[in-house]
Image 1 (cartoon, rainbow, N blue to C red):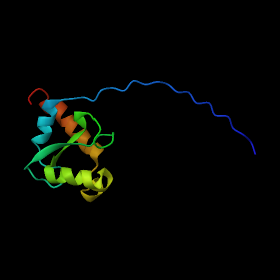
Image 2: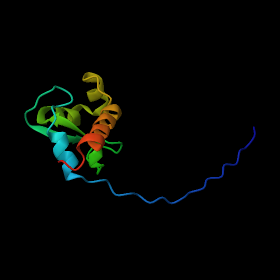
Image 3: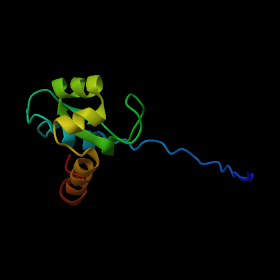
Image 4: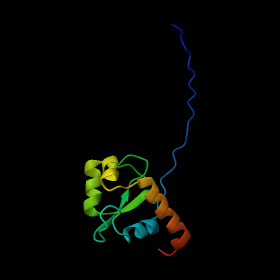
Length: 107
């Protein structure tokens, strides 16, 4: 049996602060829920790459009514995406692109 030597190099990295944008969050809240389509009680659901309840970029938010937002926290992002046939990454990219090219500075 051969022994392998593994060299690990640890590099320090600097955590960047999450992007905050109250204008973008207003835009997100003006849209219908991405899951059920409701236009009532819409909140910004932060669904970015970090875990739930951790600080994420405001640009990683999707519109969700308060009921779907609660459900997201109850069943988790994987099951939520499957249930509503959503791909958070794709939806976030679409919203960011639309906002940046059409609405930036108007909200």
